[in-house]
Length: 145
Image 1 (cartoon, rainbow, N blue to C red):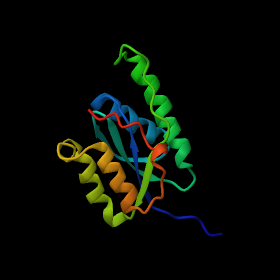
Image 2: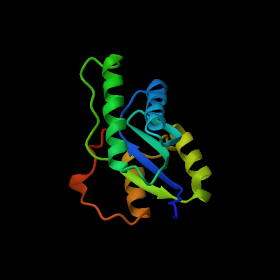
Image 3: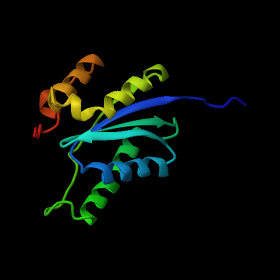
Image 4: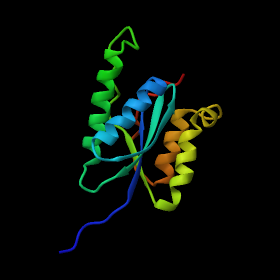
């Protein structure tokens, strides 16, 4: 009987966490779900996550779990005076194995990248480059800082 073999690499874009502790926690969630956390990094108003995704996992379920568990962690750590929650939705973009190093470096260098362009500009470029049809009213609230 034949098996299913795959290497699926997905970049997920989320908004607004707190740096290193939260990034490590998010990587732990991904690993605990049996997926490969390649890199988690971001800036003040969003996060990029590069995941080696198994075909047995539904991406939206994994992102839901990342958001729910990291929100709980952020609130339990009292990083904010008010309750934290993620915005609805996310962007996901797939890559081939030969692109992993480039995407990894892009995510690693978010601070430098966003000194030159906003999250909105970056996200709209992803949508354009991946030929994603979208309606502006269904995009993120652009909390540019």
